[in-house]
Length: 174
View: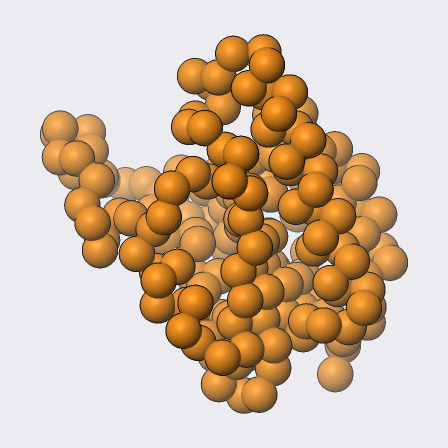
């Protein structure tokens, strides 16, 4: 079976949730899933559960200190290094064959913020193991990536309680 490329993008809630759902489905069929998280700080509730699921592994950096647009130059420099390390880990795991489904969560945000290049990701897509299923998430998807992908789902925000002052709720938004 040839592995395909999925993109979940947009301003709506649920991109990571979609990717995790696909990962759970893959693990349920005997595959190994790896989710590498970029640009996310802190612990979110789903990570607690996923850490207990055999065959579903998570890798993320502890060097993320909040939102990119709030960081100073030194913090952005540290984040760029952490992003590159996470990316290298993901590629190495894929090439070694340790993973059947690879989720690069918020990788599109790393491109948007100049931490990784679109060309770097396209090179990986062009040379990924044939059977590797690859999932990319984030808010903005460059046209070049959309053209390379097999599945593209845009998740739109029609309405969100945050616009009415409702704060993120544990177990629902994080």
